Length: 403
Image (tube, rainbow, N blue to C red; front, side, top):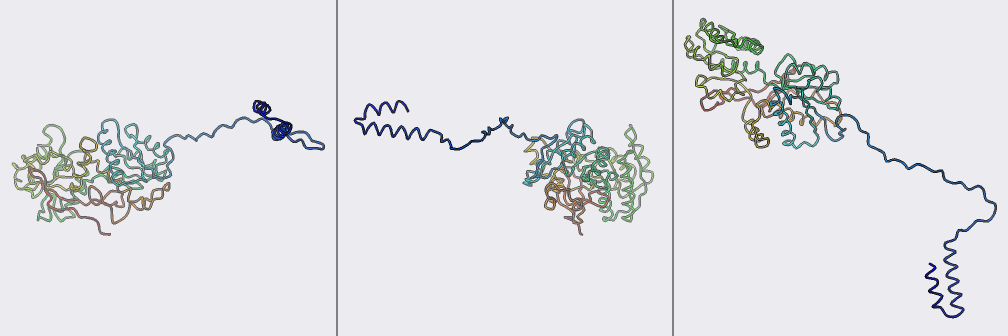
């Protein structure tokens, strides 16, 4: 400002110029000066020094951050240890189902039950999950069920052990009881009345025996002989020898693997039941070798339909680079079921458990199913006949359930 004034003075001539410059300076100074009020003045209040405020930090809580836009669902499966393969396959299937259903309101978090099923359940509940899919094994269901029940969170498990169902626990697993009942009813519809059974000496065999006896009785047939076998060398042959003493039979249930059935059929044929129909269980549906055994040609077994599963398996392999475990479809169908019920499930609210008991049932890769009062999934099963090149459907599964 001083440099500007000196330059003006050198270039202005005469008194009027000086007066102009003086006026400009006065205006500039008056613009920069402070006007002091007249009269008595009180003490001047000076502002107290303050510390700079710190920006607010987000509150960090343990577990998964809160999600106000999506429902939180836990998946409890083995992701390490001996059963890690099937557990990871189920987890992959749930991811596929979320993507295929295009659901943006569902968040699934996996918890490893191999590290302790009860620990995994408590973590899942602490993270705010309102529904639990799994566990896979019956012993894990027994550990998790009371913890979830106390929290008011239902379980949709992949077990087929009916003894763990009920009181908020629902079983999606394939029930041997239903498979045996279906194939016995089909054999009875073909005029067969005289039955025999060969079952393993283990828990599965005990349940198969009970289901078999009840199914034949309800169908109006007779069980002429029921024998158990163990895994020891010669155990199967000894059981078949005992069975042959009461022959011949029109139909024989072999409740076990296809390998056990293939080993026993030649012995049965030599014992006087050459024309007896061989009946299998749902275990054969997951056994790729069943169709390559000549001894089982023409045998019948009941299971869930494989039509949609084959399409699913192709997509799974394309996405994950390997084939799925057969049980993985349970994970896929559990997600489809959840997505359907989400229409009546506001975000953050408890899961509407009553919707699981819809008498009309639900549909999935494995066909139609609905939960009975005991929490076990009742399934629409088909009967297949084994041939060298595959299996053909000889009695289709119902498309749904009447109310």
